Image 1 (cartoon, rainbow, N blue to C red):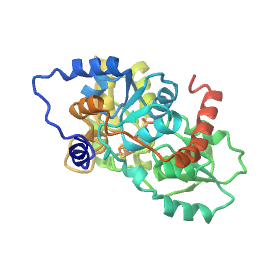
Image 2 (tube, protein in one colour):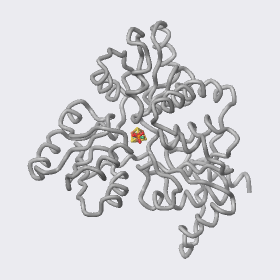
Image 3 (cartoon, rainbow, N blue to C red):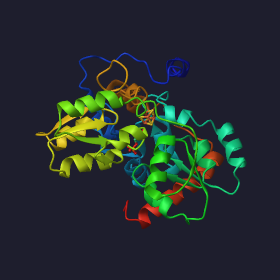
Length: 333
Ligand code: 13P
Ligand code: SF4
């Protein structure tokens, strides 16, 4: 069985046929109870996965949940760096990821050996890295940040301390503008947030003049310049629920629209158009996870995210610093 399982897992997930009559929602609920498992899902997951999750959140909220859970198994419906984060913070738990190949173009844009060499050229710089990076990059960083706490993290650093920010150049440029700093930026970007078309969005805004533009700070400067509100996925969701407008053009991955629509059934949410011929913007990595893969990984408790303990301890330092600053700033409980 193990040889067969390994062969199946070469794909990154268990490619086992599922009886189509099976009620996967009920099966997943049963497995959660039987195995004392918790499902943590990012907002970019497909709606079915969001609906079976115990907690849906942005990277900061998910890290906090992963740290605090008393479940025996954390099923991470997100991408690889998020499951790594859960393991870094809570090593005693078994961390499962429905598809081990669910990566991230932003994390891939900072290979550890190149980043290490870059860092060594700037020994006087403090390294702040966005959580969308590998455990190796976290281990080379002084503090981690997310889109939900980045401003507070930067504020916590003395003004005369030079900072190197990685891997997202768009988020870094946005933070430089907001904070008045001149952080040195690594040249990385997210393939999903870089693809929004300013021209198409401007035309869309002309057709829907009442619509407010919501944008994630991983978007390029020109898109952020026309946004009415910029924030992490949780912040965008909260804003769309509490704000008085009734129409929104949403410049981030389309998965978030599911929660926006559920929270505000009478409002209209329009996905911001990308430069390609597609009408919406899906993250191909996030969308590798499916309800079927989620069920199989819970049933067979594989693929499991494992990590070398030395690397985990090295990566935990910068994660702990982030959690401490976020707590002191009242961003997490
Ligand atoms: P947040 O949900 O933390 O805003 O992150 C967005 C993202 O790109 C995750 O991959
Ligand atoms: Fe990575 Fe971008 Fe996908 Fe988020 S949306 S997982 S940053 S590629």
